[in-house]
Image 1: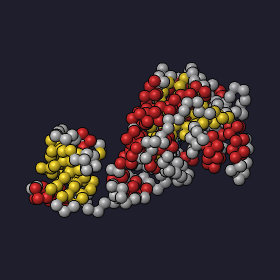
Image 2 (image 1 turned 180 degrees about the vertical axis):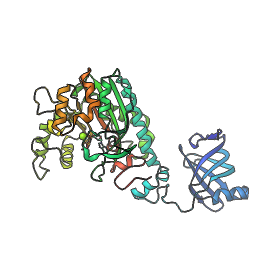
Image 3 (image 1 turned 90 degrees about the vertical axis):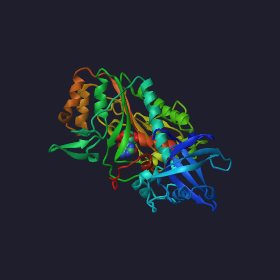
Image 4 (image 1 turned 90 degrees about the horizontal axis):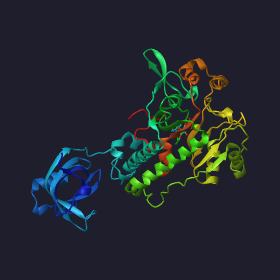
Length: 434
Ligand code: ATP
Ligand code: MG
């Protein structure tokens, strides 16, 4: 199919062979139209029944919607056609006939519920606005990768089958590894840290993380895409700077490369690239502001994690992306370093979108004895992590980094209600296939 022309490139005067899906057939009597759709758009194919070969007309008008066909013919200008051009066919081949009954309607005239859409993702992604989400996802990741490169990072890939978890035992998926117990990795945390002490120094990874989340929520997946960053000789503030640049670059890349897709989602006018200089609130200030909104039934006290309602109340109050810094050490993981001025306070930070948490990060504990003590405080056995802690005895530089949820970035960027809309084939408590 080398000589195939995309519908968007069909120009009056050309003779073309188009290939795509039958979007719609409109039979007006003496004249009929077949709307052919491909990845670039749609085009009108005109049938003048009396003036055309009967067999050709019959093939073109009897084929079921969503069948795959090729159409060869001449492109002509036609002001009344949706794209200003139409094709007068002289040959039509049906390459793959579709069943007359479809599980969902790709023309979008009949709405489908999310589960039906996810069960039939191939058909779902024939809809312009759904396809647009995944083209934007691709555009977003392109911007992220380019920005990481300009920050001097090396892209790495770390194992997803591991011997031990890092973010708390209950969220682990066990797997059987040649008769031994192993787990799906919850985060590349320890591996990326090991790389800042290698010759690479500054790294990023975009890959899956696996979490057996307790509940089904609109913002948790059991397999998510984490955008991870880690750099030697960075402190928490440097890491927040890098984080802000990545988030802004993601938006910029979408604004620059995905205009058509934003338009398909009805976002072309309202899409805004966030402005640099995201506010940085300390955890203490955050709690005070949340309590001051009066939106919680119970006032938060120092040491509490922020419940969903608290995040929402603060998000509404701040109204833009913001960091929460200096979290209590006790509610951050063992690998986060305490601040120099107060061991009750950690260098851990979260980046928040007004709707929800996007990122967790911080400066890491690079001092061997402190790291071992941290493990013990969290009830973890340092021996199980010896592959990791050992390297802290051979020259591990101070370092910092973060993990950004790729789907959460996309869902907040596009205002998607449910995180499942941001994944082709989501994994949740009920869904393991497709
Ligand atoms: P939350 O409190 O919102 O459940 P978390 O604090 O448990 O998130 P982290 O361990 O800090 O998550 O992971 C870093 C980032 O990875 C999160 O800020 C989020 O963007 C993303 N992330 C974590 N877990 C999930 C998940 N189950 N589904 C989608 N994204 C996730
Ligand atoms: Mg977090």
